[in-house]
Structure formats: C-alpha cells, structure tokens
Image (tube, rainbow, N blue to C red; front, side, top):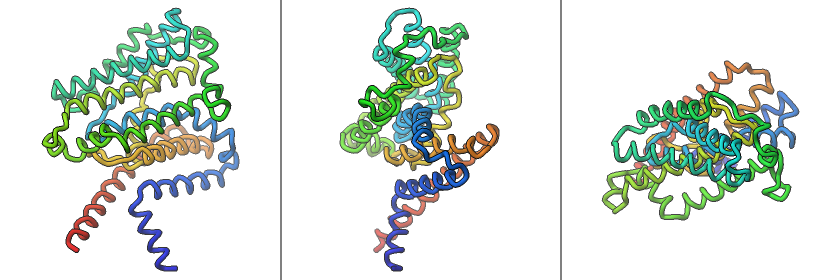
Length: 335
C-alpha cells in the first residue's frame, strides 16, 4: 500500500498535467458544494461558450512563450481584426460568416507579422515591442470605428445566430466550442509530431544550440508571432459573434488571462517548456474560476485581485518545479 502511494505521489510530482487535472477536479467539486447549479449541463455549456475566446487565444500565447518571447498585443490585435471584419460586414462587403472569420484571421495574422518584423528585424525586446504595438493596434481600432459600435442589427442574421447554434458539430456542441476543440486538436498534432513544433521547442530551450544545428531562429520567431496574430484574429471573430457586436474596447485585459492560463498550465516564461494539454487545463481552470467566483458571491474587484494572485502563485510553483526537476536530473547523472 505504501509503495503504491509513493508511486502515485511520484507520478503527481513528475506530471504537471495530472496534478493540474486533480486540482481542477477538486476545484469543481468545491464550487459545486457551495452552489449546486455549477456542475449542470447548462452551466458547463455556457462556461465553455463564454470562455471559448480565452481558451483559444491561449494557444497563440503558448507558442510565443515557448520561444522565450511574449506578446501583450494579442488583445488589441483581437479588437482591431474583429472590428475591421465587422465593419466590412456592416458595409455589405460580404455577408458570409465564413468569409468574415477568414478576413478577421487574415487581419490578425498581418498584425502578428508586424510584431514579428519589429522583434526579429528591429531587434526590439518582445515586451517593449508588443507594449508599443498594443497601443498602436488599440488606437487604430478606435480610428477605423470612429469610436462607435457595430451593433447586432447591423450584422447578418446568420452571423448573429452562429454563436448560439451547434451546426458545425452536427448538433453535438456549440459552434464556438467546436472551433476551440478543432484548434486544440490541430495544435496538439503540430507541436507533438511535426518538425516545426520541435523547432519551436528547440529555439525556446537553447537558441544558440538551435542556430548551430541549422535552425533559422528569426524565421521561427516570425512564424510564431504570425500564428499568435492569426489566433488573435480568430478570437476577434469569435468574440464578435459571441456578443453580436463589435466594440473598440473588446478584449481589454484578455492578454493577462491567457498568460495566466499558460503559466498555470506549466508553460515556462523562459521558453522551451509546456504542452498543449497543460495549456488546455490551465485555460479551463481560469474559466472555472471566472465562472465560479460570481456564483459564490465574490465581487468584481476581488475577482481581479484573485486572478493576479493565481498568476503569481503559478509562476512561483513553476520556478520551484523547474528547480526540483534540475536537482533530480543532476542526481540521476551522478548515479
């Protein structure tokens, strides 16, 4: 019995995903005990739908963090791409929901390419570059919109219904949730079984060694920031569909939520470490917390403080975990 317990504890210490899954399960049970309406099909469906944008955008942030970078402009890219695509639908440039999503993804990718060029060609630190571009993209959103909303009545009826229906999955799950599932499945394959995914990890783990092995560091960084921009564009369209409106301040502060989701999921801020499964669990943890706090009567002000505390705690745990892993690796080498 003791040996089995030791084996289980060893697995928990070595697997961040398993530990996080158990924490998430305990958190759900604890909230259910406080409010018995939490673990219901309706509540879970609403939670996944409402947080689908954050959960999806976390993939873009993960790719950036894996190369040792950061992109705090993703929320502003989200707003700019979503607003531009919405304005074109309002003005009758197109009426198709698919085209609207593709246009938003394209605009978001262009924003990501600008970020990538500034960092790789301009040799600007990622935090400085994306801080400046955050204000540029957000300001551009206000300029193109004239500080006005695109309201529900100005959208096509099919687009307004998109976030409320489940046609893409043939009635199984909400359309936005289905998009999120597809993104995670594709990204899991990309990161685990492709050369490009391995190169991302290599650049983040040891850029010098990656360069010596023939990897074009700047090309990988440019591609990763472009991917992050594409995810920002996708979530811009999802956000607009979810609320059936486009506002200049939409997505404000979302970059902190997606960074928190990644860090909670075990993505190292130093790069080279993290998994798609971990990010999914981290994003779901943020979604559960975001849904649970209002249900148990926590005020909006305390919710923000609690999120900040969660980020800080997750970073400390990550640092301690990495130190423990290094010590264990050194011990194994000595043996």
